[in-house]
Length: 551
Image (tube, rainbow, N blue to C red; front, side, top):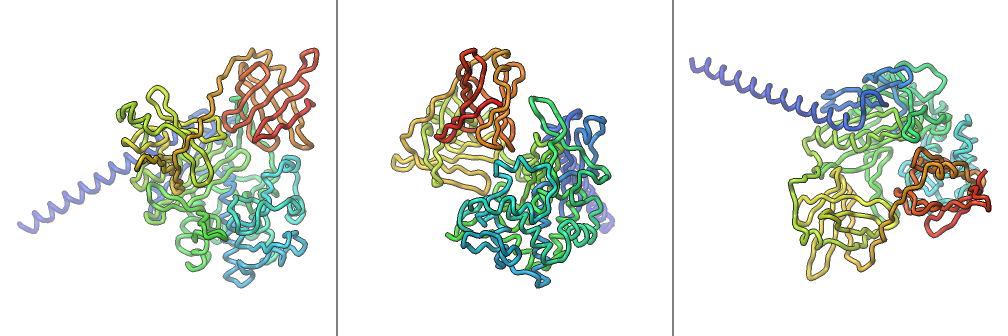
């Protein structure tokens, strides 16, 4: 009888445990749904998200449209261009060749490209992998916009950027760099005897049964391809064309969420290289001065509320992606979007936080502190990196604004001296000792200390309304220098500007002819002739004046 009661108790215990787990899983699903549905709507461009824990899928859903023109709904199997997540595949390819003894991470790049102008500096494969080479990234070059549609062989395209001045000496700084990973692709070809596309497709995709992964192509028929889009003036259009020979080893891979889980599983299980080899990718490297860069080989280092993460995102015309792995919890989150206008980065981080039960704090309107307490922290703070951040108070609400930016952000109190931005990623912690005020500004893993200074905050710019017919007269293309053009368009009472190779930004009127940007500290003034016809503009930015003639 006693044994029967014990069995009954055990059954009830396990039943309760099972039901509890079911309820927790359902709650997590609803929370993740809410995060994704806040950005991706049924009749717009969409996204696919997958969450896995200990290799098992716990969430896998699609939202929005895979093809707006054909009214095709997104599904989890859809294939996307992953952009810079490609760098993980390039890094592991290099490590595979390292294990085979075909290269050394300390090899000078001139071993593979003898005529590369290193300006007397020693640039190694390690420098390329860690974005510390100092080589100019081709995506930051103004003339890149002139060649985006051209198919080019690797060496030919290396010629395109190799003579640019170096940004800094190798190992001196960290600066995200697509040129470095492009060169790595060529090194893979030289040492393996295979083209880069052939290497990743045969030695990675086929080995891991990643049957929905490809080296990108605009002409090849790819099953379940999600169409890529962009948004201009509030309207969707097909993404700008770019030859896939140019992103190359820095950003040309296509995949879906299921294959990306296979990839993450292979990395965790050391399927492609030994543990001591893959650990090189997960080492937080340092600059020449010993400062950590929070980047390894193809993965960046961050944290979610104190829990370490490995991450990387991607962006390519028409697509954005974000992958987050939490090693301590063996949780993997991957989110793809098929519009350059909708980044999944913050969403993927929030989802990972939910999956490990470490959600970010959100604004709580029920928590408040007095105006006197808020006013205590108002003023300017100078941080270690030289940045000045101004804290202001308006209508019992604190705002933070970085010097040089036109944007200010609301700060919500979580205690009498701690504040969080709306997304919970950015926080302030203020303190005062012996009359000296300091502020700790933290963006996840990045933490900076600021000291109170008497510098005055910039005066707030006030917008005025300008008639749509006046704005229409400013439309056109203005050439500031050869190959660098600002295109001005209008829609109703809104004016927009887009520089060659850059995103489009809204302009806000200060006067009938002078406008400012909110995303950066810059302004544009239009000039007309004696007949009132607009013939030119001047861009004011960073203390410089650049005049552009209307074409």
